[in-house]
Structure formats: C-alpha cells, structure tokens
Length: 432
Ligand SMILES: Cc1cc2nc3c(=O)[nH]c(=O)nc-3n(C[C@H](O)[C@H](O)[C@H](O)COP(=O)(O)OP(=O)(O)OC[C@H]3O[C@@H](n4cnc5c(N)ncnc54)[C@H](O)[C@@H]3O)c2cc1C
Image 1 (tube, rainbow, N blue to C red):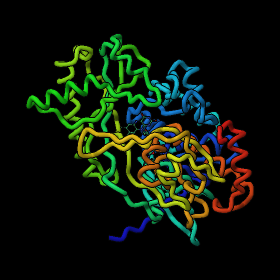
Image 2 (image 1 turned 90 degrees about the vertical axis):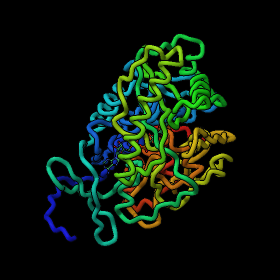
Image 3 (image 1 turned 180 degrees about the horizontal axis):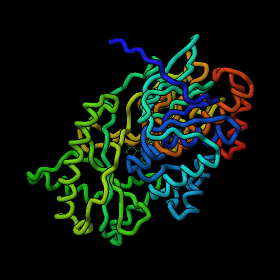
Image 4 (image 1 turned 60 degrees about the vertical axis):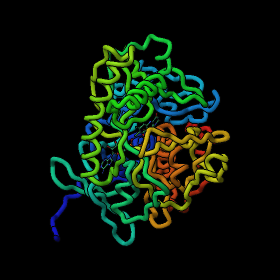
C-alpha cells in the first residue's frame, strides 16, 4: 500500500532526541545546557523510561568498591533526587534507590531549566533522509502526523527505533534474548525483619535476591504447586515505608513485535497475582501485602542494538580495556538473565569498564548518535552497560558531542576526541 500525505514540519532544531529515559535525559541536559536548541520526543506522558514506567529501581551503579566512577550529569541528577528527599545511595556500590514520582518531577524540572522543548505523548514513527543524511523525524500524536527537522539526532529509544527506521544495521543476538519482566509495587510488606534488610544491602559480590522467598517458591513447585516462572526476586525500596518494588516475573519477549509484547505482558500480569498470592500465604513478611501498582510498561532488558563503528565486547569490558575515546564507565557485572528458567549468569569486571565514543556512532550516519541500552555492544558487554547510570552517561556523552560537532561544523565521525573527553571531564565525569 502506498500512502501519500503532506506532513507539516512543526519545528526546526539543532538536535532532536528520541526517547526520554535515562539516556535521553542525560543527552538533553548536556546538549541544551551547551546552547544546543534541543527537542525531545517521548511516547509516554512522563520522563524516565524504564526507571519510572518500568518500576526499575535502583539506578545502578555509581561506585566500584566504594570509589565513585560515575560523575557528571548522572551524579547531578542523583544529588537532585536526594535533595528532594526522593532517593538515597546504598553503599558501597552506590546504587540509587529512588521514588519514581520524584524522579519524574526532577527530570522534568531539569529539562525545563536547561531549555529543552518537549514533545510528550508523541511517538517517533519514521524518519526522512535527504541527500544521504537524516533530515527529519516523523512523529505521531493526537494532532496527527507531524515532522521535526534537525541537524543532529540522538536515538535514545532503548529499542533503537530511529536507527532501525533509518535502515541501519542491527547487531545479531548472540544467544537467546534476555527475558522481559513486569515489575510491580507492594505495600504492607514487613521490611523490619532481618532477612528483609536485603533491600538495603547491595555490595559488589552480593546479589540482592530475596533468597528466602526464592527458596520457598521453588520448594512449593517441588511439592506440585503451580508457581509461574520467576527470577530473583529482586526487591528494592521506593523510599516509602513498607512499600517495595518487586522484580520477579519473567517471560521471553520481543519488544519490537507488538503481538508478542502484548501476550508476554498479559501472561506476566496473571503471574503477578499468582506469585503474590503464594507469597502472602507462605512468606511471613508478605502476609499483609497488597499490590499497589503494576508498572505501566513491561521491563525490557534487551531488544535491538545498533552496529556502531566499534562493537564493545564483553571481554573488553571485563578486562577494563581503556580506549582513547572512552566517554563513560560502568561496573555492573555482565548480568545475563536466562529466558528459559530461573537462572542468571554473572561475570564481574576486574574494575570499572569503559565505553568508547565509537560505540555511540555508526559508519554511515554523520549526524546520528546512539545512547543508552541500544548502543553498539555485544550481548555480554550489553548485559553490563545496560544499567541506568552508564545509560545516562552515554546520553551525556552524545549530548556533549552534538554541541562540539555543531560548533565545529563536523560530522560525528570527525569529532575532536580530545575536546570531547576534556568537555565530559569538565562536566564532572570520572574518565580516568
Ligand atoms: C526488569 C529489569 C530490571 C532491571 N534492573 C536494573 C537495576 O536494578 N538497575 C539499573 O540501573 N538498571 C536496571 N535495568 C536496566 C535499565 O533499567 C535500562 O536498561 C535503562 O533504564 C535503559 O535506559 P534507556 O534510556 O537506554 O532506555 P529506556 O529507559 O527504555 O528509555 C527509552 C525511552 O524512549 C521512549 N521511547 C521508546 N520508543 C519510542 C518511540 N518510538 N517514540 C518515542 N519514545 C519512545 C520510551 O518510552 C522510554 O521513555 C533493568 C531493566 C529491566 C527490564
């Protein structure tokens, strides 16, 4: 079918960022604060992506063995949340547990302060290339189809929607895609017991699984009780007494296939009620708990990843290979959740690993950068750098890069790397 229609160009910007999760937020603040006329397109009505829509808590992880490795905008964002009484760092990894509503508020305020133009409730649907370069994005919302024109674009959609629409090459999956999880919030949990202190105990070698819940559920299954597939469970405080977020459902999922996404979500919604009933009946701390909310969006660990100039490998990450163009650091283990069962594979890096700028750009597009979980990394490296602090840091790097490329009039492939790294350090990043 062919469909021809005049689509109004409703705005012209230096930069259009698609996606308002951790990466998009970092990118927007970094660029707009440097005088880049920036617009951000977000399909939901609030910012935060997985952090707020997926109930993914905490924001991992700012420190390695008690030493901060993430500074810059992610740290400034964390400090803003803390100042608002909506977050706390947990030593020694400095995971940031936060109240998702405070997160939304803080992100919105920071973007407004920086002067970002927001297109919320607006879906990136397509893009237009002219004379070999990306020129416009086609967005859709209650006003119909519209176009935004820009000199530069950042794909921070998590699913690489913009890069995919532009026809860029995606990286192959190395093995089964990691499962999705529909997270939820419980109130009325007795968090005062010794074994519930798990929600505040996250050190480097300690997996914050609620092992006592896991063992009980597995024992029930052994006895023939129907227990849906689950992972963890991983519990986190939302800063509200007796209220926790729970990450435990899991389902194979293809977030880029709407029917598959819907079926997986429906299944996990059923599973939540079954699992909570079992926990109320069999685990003391959960006896009086209630489901207060289920995340508005399914938690997507893995979907598309763009093939960039450099494909960060798991080996490079674990060995902490330092690149001449390192722009972000991460120290989360290579954390592979297995889709078929309750398992998880963890490989710890030797120290904090590095992410090169070349993983944020492609060979072909002179004015497109990728930020967040869809950057160019193999399945193993991806399984580490997908957590929120590094996602926001790659966003920051992409935003700073646009400011430099715009000022110097160069393609992203020709950026002055020394200048980029110096500017990122000036922002407070700890790229040693
Ligand atoms: C179950 C689960 C548990 C996790 N646990 C942790 C953890 O404990 N700690 C941690 O730090 N990380 C954790 N992560 C990983 C982390 O949450 C994400 O990888 C990270 O938040 C990704 O950030 P992002 O900005 O790249 O993408 P996202 O947060 O996915 O943001 C993308 C944004 O783009 C928007 N968008 C997408 N497509 C379009 C479109 N076409 N048009 C307009 N807008 C669009 C989305 O609405 C969203 O707001 C977990 C993830 C999952 C799923």
